Length: 124
Image 1 (tube, rainbow, N blue to C red):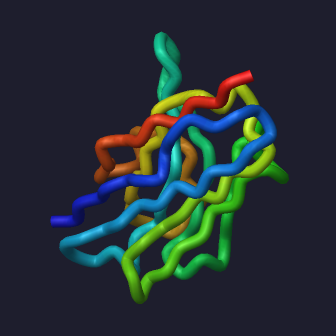
Image 2 (cartoon, helix red, strand yellow; image 1 turned 90 degrees about the vertical axis):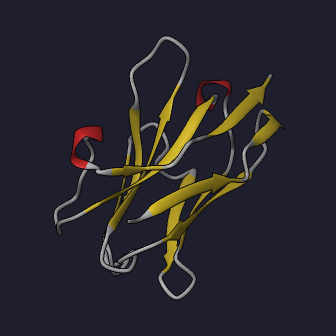
C-alpha cells in the first residue's frame, strides 16, 4: 500500500520561497500521477499542481502558475513543490496525493492516497 509523507512547510515572509517534499513508500509510486492540494481554514481543499507518472505533463492552478513548480524523482519516490514569490493567500495546509490514470487530474475525489499535510504560513 502506498503511503505519503509531506515535509518542508513552515513560516515564511511575503515574497519568500519554500520547497515542499513528499516521500512515498510502499507499492507502485512510479506509475502514479501525483498532485498537490491545499486547504485553508474554513475552505475546501483546492487543487494546486499535477504531474503525470513520467513527468511529461504538468498542470497548475491559475493562482500559482508561474510561481510554483512541481517535479518528481521516481528513482527516489519523491515529488516536490517549489514555491516562489509566496503570498499571504498561499497560507494553508498542503497535501500531496497519488492517483491512477493518465489524464490530468484536478479534483480531490480523483486521488486515492493522501499524506497527512504540512503547514505553510506566509506572513505579511
